Length: 272
Image (spheres, rainbow, N blue to C red):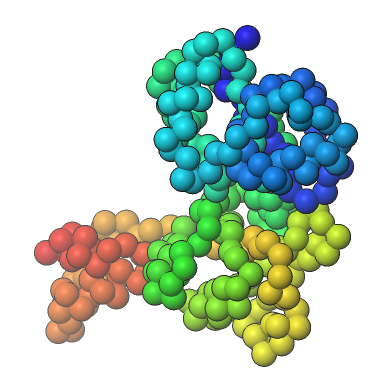
């Protein structure tokens, strides 16, 4: 049988591998891995010989290999795609290949496994519904500020990946936007030094004691549901009261922008 199969792998603890994943690792022939050295080390751990397997790399800069992979599938081969850890499509390079396989109407399957997104959500103690996963957070301070601001009116638990050498900066930026908020830091999930820490702004002076800048991080925070947005009738009544006291429409639109979490220009157009 030919097609593409994504294979979920452990994110740290090898005992989390599934029986289905082990079966294809033993019996599959064509494998594309984010890092072939990491993948071969995994096979060696499970005492699986790769002498007769075809193993090649597939990462963010491997778009040129998509055509050859598709050709393998067309020629009747079952191709397996793995990342270093977790799902090959969660903040990993699988999507362009998956989209091409779908567009070609070729067979496509997945063998699911553990993911740091769900693991962090489970351990955070934050409400799970709804939750929003945003991948790796932006690198610059201004981009992070913009992202955190934009999520202020969005109900739910928000999850990001972050690198160890930027984690302290991101923590401080978060509390610039949410001084009364809480931030959960999940580090080294499923591994020996797994750590879950909930921080408040008062913890910033000792944050380096609570969070080590080593390992892999998921950061999480929760926004409560915003109050029901004001109705048009109520809005017009408030507008009239405000204008009667000499207020300006432009100024008022900025006030309601903060209250409703909407663009002030859109509100201004409603008020005119």
